[in-house]
Length: 310
Ligand code: NAP
Image (cartoon, rainbow, N blue to C red; front, side, top):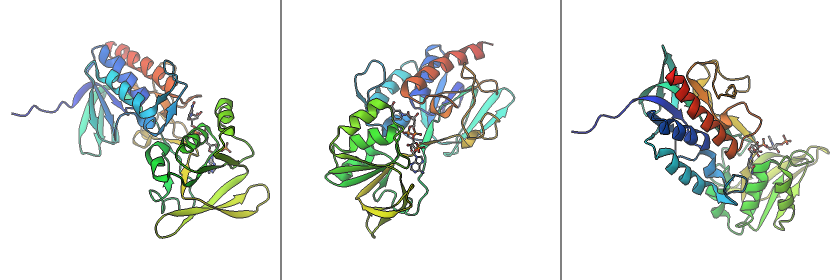
């Protein structure tokens, strides 16, 4: 006889990135029953990150490798893991009911929202048309398709510059298009990139369209934001890193989001709904890093325990 699937937990952690995995580890180590739910593989944005050199304890670590190690740590005290994109969260008295796109319903006394953020789209013609045919948001995933090719990276933050640098290991040349006159990336990231002979930075330039033939991307149309001059740059691929948007759609009716859609919490990671906590990139926070997400997760895992103890 098959064992009936467990659907009721002390805590459900929605999202298995660094913050969610840490919360799950702390809560399960405190002997709570914990379910981690994720719409895909554990790791969150770690899976889109080539190299991390600012996470304590590692001089340098590949994002997917760190994700695997975190997952092993997160599940060692008995936390369960299930696939499913959360579509709805309902409050039934003190209980939280979570419904996924797999048609499954789980209940818990407490929730930790750790859904992180998604990459912002550029919103220009050709972007969705050529997605997967030269347009990408993940250098680690797609870089290998562009060996010896000319690439464009759009954006000027840490992600654009770091992932652009990663792409130079494969591509012939990486041109970074920055819409303003300066980068937003940290100085150490910029310094390294400026020394990279395969990287070129073009400032004050926005992409107005991604163009291609029936097969794939062939380039981008641009405009100079100072002179208004238009142009076209040939390229085999376009990697877009123009910031993030919160993944909070299922929580919009709970009254816990700010006007931009990020989750508001206090310093205990508690939202204003008792028993609902949030950690990591999905929070309205001043710094979105692996280290800060992990710190949030530790606090939430411990606070969940305190909440359930009453
Ligand atoms: P970000 O810091 O928000 O930077 C977004 C970049 O995209 C900015 O340069 C912005 O330009 C540009 N941009 C926005 N909309 C654009 C558009 N429509 N067209 C062209 N450019 C556009 O995003 P991120 O680089 O993804 O980083 C997100 C967070 O993760 C940050 O807090 C970052 O520090 C952190 N992060 C840290 C590391 C690390 O510590 N190693 C690595 C990756 C990410 P403007 O400057 O003109 O607004």
